[in-house]
Image (cartoon, rainbow, N blue to C red):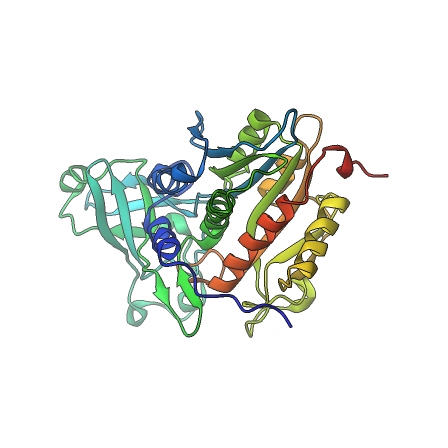
Length: 364
């Protein structure tokens, strides 16, 4: 029998809600990074922020010349950026990351300005006024616009500037059971797990045989940029990336594409060229011994995650990818199971306790 997971700690759930609520489109991550930094500071020997905006919490191990282990989740989310304000005060925008043009019309948004968020809506021509052929066509993002209620360009310019970041207005929503929905679980779910690993290690009172670095990285959605620089700076021997992955237990997703993955069935371990074989087996064996349910996916090439750039940083890093099943990726209603988040943190903590040398990860 697999262990039942208790309810998520009240303080941890509050942190998760605050993290998700904080705006963090790629390049605009610092509101969320401030939340992460404040939460992990009491658990770490040192917390630093680099020039890119990556936040790193370090917990030193017991001993000398210890292997460095880096765990990372990215805090940036998809969003929009203001590009042009027309004479009537409507705001035109571009995508930050992979924004689906099908979804944007009719959405409420927040434009994040120097003086605070300005609410707006993405307008759309009424269906009554559309030609039949236009009803079947997706309006390109560059033709969509945000209405903030301004009367003209001059009035709009008093409120917003070209270059301001935009997020979808989306509240943290409790669904049935332990399912929750929000924008930004890609990949604040990973940041949450990284923070919980740091908390659990500190709470145990035990010193690991590794120096641990927990990183909340930036700009992943536009090219794995923060993962690249933080990996280079830390120069880890072992790296674990915590990401989200497509759940295939919703009606319109083909299991042949991404395997059989369901919410509430445990974190996912990827296997493939991006993954160190020994680290994969160590995570898998640990899950079995700790009676933590896990799922598996195949990654036949480099993954589109920070695990990719971490693996090939400097002379190479023994890398693994622990993923959280996610429904409705890159929408304002991304949905996860809280149990999967907690089990991912428990799995990583238990695995860290079994690492003692760099050499064990060298393929034989």
